[in-house]
Length: 93
Image 1 (cartoon, rainbow, N blue to C red):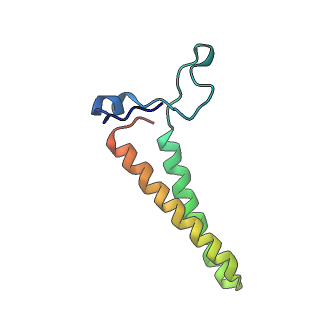
Image 2 (cartoon, rainbow, N blue to C red):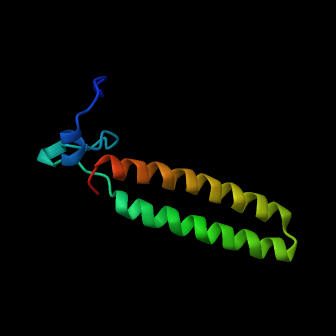
């Protein structure tokens, strides 16, 4: 299980192992580390494309599509903010 103690700056700089991988460390495999830079690029791209899609859907009069795309853009913006926070905290990736 995950530890309840507060992590040190050095632990974040080394990187945190992925505890969500059920096969982690099986057969001597090293734990995986998060690809934060890739997540930043993908989240930013999703925000831009969702906003552009909402604008196009709005011009076409598809209100339901606008709502879905705006919700997607907001969720991606929140994810983008959190991943940037983790990256600035010192986690590698």
